[in-house]
Image (cartoon, rainbow, N blue to C red):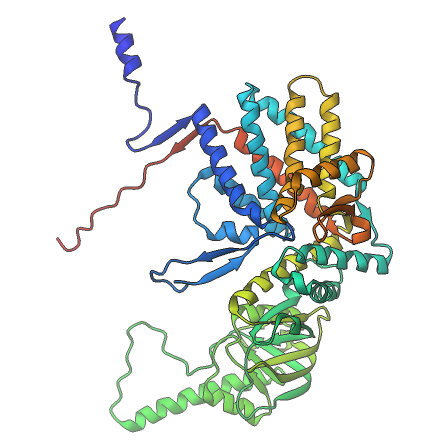
Length: 542
């Protein structure tokens, strides 16, 4: 008996020294607290009247020391802040997946997941088992997605109507960003750029260039491709019917590549012979390049003065040091390939375009490629007063481009302004009324979490959310399924008349991702933290 008592008072050690463990209720409390803290952090950025956050890097060392970031993009905020809570990292991951998959809705997905977990606290207090809650949530998710699919519309067969839908989606996406005041101008830019892709979702053909100066309304869409480089000295600054060889090869004097090798000579004349031999070798390389019948040579690496002079003598335009991303994108847009050896000119595919010319934007010179083989290429030139404005504008434009390109691929649309969320919440509440047992309580909690999204949107705008959401719920119960919140007037209105549309793919992804993440967190009943790795003592100087 005494042995049993001593064993109970001194449990058998299972883990190594330094390992921390949190069990059952404590683990759940810790995980829910982390998730809700992340939700509370970014929910003020939700909606057209959402606020921005300033993120500042520490002042100590590094290339980004003291750098400022002003943004209201959920994925950007969560990816830049250091989070230690393991469950909070799950929400950071779902915002990243939402950003990669759709491009927008990153705040919505995190807020919905955190609201689901907030509801779970009450359910667990009522002694409802996590597996019962999960079973109810799964039924609620299926019902919500079924209703969402039922209201989704596809206007892709009518070109004019589909373009109008894309414009409305772009306006809705940009209305919660820094570009809200100029959303008409930028929505047109984004729609024109995405329609040039002709159905492709790869945004490599759309380049975004940022230049300080003027204001945001001076931003424009440039046909063709812009490269942020300069044309070499004594070379043509304008060239028609260009045949372009894109390369990644050293065009400096060839160095002896053996580590530590030295060349000893007994006279200055021998040094001159070595220099002459190097020159001849470079001349041979340039002649091999010229055999490709190209009149433009673009190299990722530097081109030294001597080969540049040889190219200029032959009337070939040479562009050096085009960074790797620029070269990759150029090859794709111009229909050429990147080469490193020049022994088989007949097997190399050259890039083609109608015109290459040097243009000036602000105070910078750029090279413009017009009439490219890949007709889908275009460049959005952003202007703005400060670097922070330009960076946030670029993130906003990228979100809009991603959503639009996904909408072209999956053309169904649904209504924004909280209309889709309230529609799903009403359907889920009706399902809860028909469901027997404790699962109905879990299903009703899912509906309450969905209603929190329009509530937060109204709160962020400074309106009376309780009244607005009650009016919206009454409208949906009366069958007005297209009604949502008009944040300009602070009233319930028809989203069809206001043209507030969102991508069906985006809404579906938000609901399914948030439900899966919340379900995964709810399953947790144990958190085990490994001890930090002990540092080995440095014995080199002892």
